[in-house]
Image 1 (spheres, rainbow, N blue to C red):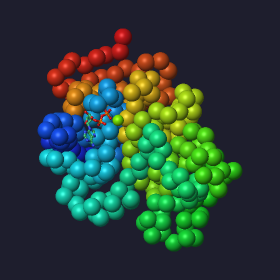
Image 2 (image 1 turned 135 degrees about the vertical axis):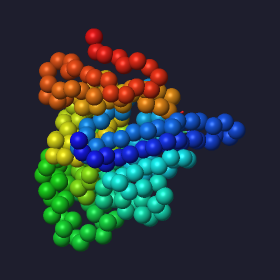
Image 3 (image 1 turned 90 degrees about the vertical axis):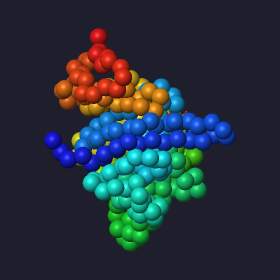
Image 4 (image 1 turned 120 degrees about the horizontal axis):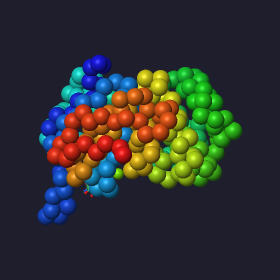
Length: 255
Ligand code: ADP
Ligand code: MG
């Protein structure tokens, strides 16, 4: 068993809206090993995006500790967090979050510009990424000149250009038709097969079932933590699922 890459202990995230409090995450404990493929599922408002934003150091918990690769990243300064994010984490969003004024190639290069990589190295890597993601003919197109699938491929190329240890994807297929969505998932799964940890929010049960592990969230808590006993994705039919830990509910086994 690999040592934990991600460890959350006692994580709470409370949002204040006027006089009311929203408990987006309630006392969350979670351990994820390097190279895992995890689907985060659950109804709208259950805390999936809040969890992913915390894992991606885009947000901070009110209480609790987040250890990333053994290091407590909860207490880092914003600049230090940005450095960790830049070097270790790739983020893919539902609505792509590309910079509208920049071409596909410039969007892909952006993390390397921010990290201060020299221009020749940037050019080499962008060229390879455009090739890897089938975007060579689209290098100089702006996002509004690309299809949804092409935009998400640019976003994935941008998320992986710094060779992160983990990819966090929040409903990456939410704005794509089914066939294009499956293509995007396959790209992410290829990266996972190369050793990158993949944590993906989806409310599509069929996509979630491709992951080796499924976290079922409800009302800010992980209600179920399911692991496939056989390799996912390529296996035919419904793979067997075993229950590892549960919160308050019983494990639902596939029928
Ligand atoms: P999900 O991604 O599962 O749909 P979220 O993590 O986005 O859920 O939200 C969890 C809860 O926290 C929801 O009740 C949501 O309204 C609330 N929430 C999320 N972000 C904020 C915010 N920035 N300010 C106030 N409430 C928020
Ligand atoms: Mg969400």
